[in-house]
Length: 234
Image 1: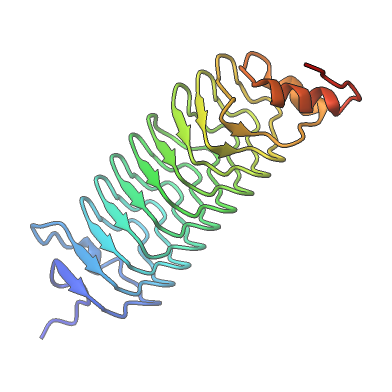
Image 2: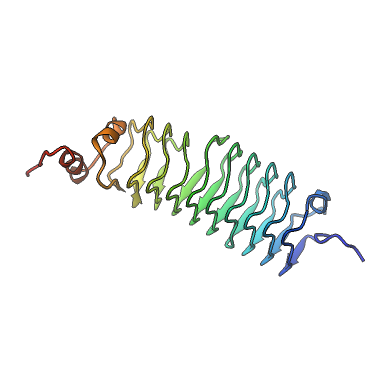
């Protein structure tokens, strides 16, 4: 009997927590892996090959996936809170309704990667590589997004309260039902951006200057002026 915990392509309800799975995932099974409701919390998946894999309602809390290859992979539901995904290759990957709180993505290749409905509070998204990644209906409160590139995107349902957006490229973005309350905007680029669908909160004057070139609604402009004691009357 094989002692390989991942000897078959499709695995359901397996406890793989705290295991070193690097050797097991080095074998080519000739078909994409499908993991359903598996517990990989604290597991070591560094450099693992998960090309076109499907992970459904799995737990990867605290797992190490540094330099793993997730091209074309889809992770739906479940949690990877606190996982390390630095320098992963995730071109064309998709994360749907996954808890990614406090995850680390520094140096990750995210070309055409999509995040939808994910909890990404406190996530570190600095020094990303690749273009065309998308974020929709995600909670990025307190996330570190320095240098994030979302130019030309429609940003819908994003919560970026108190996130670090310094040096982010947000030119020509269109914001829909999103929040930017207390976000750190130093050096961010907003030229051509439409922020009328974003809740900016009370933007301090020293932060308001970083919105130069963006389109604001009357109410938003009024709140900025109110911060320096100017009242706008219709």
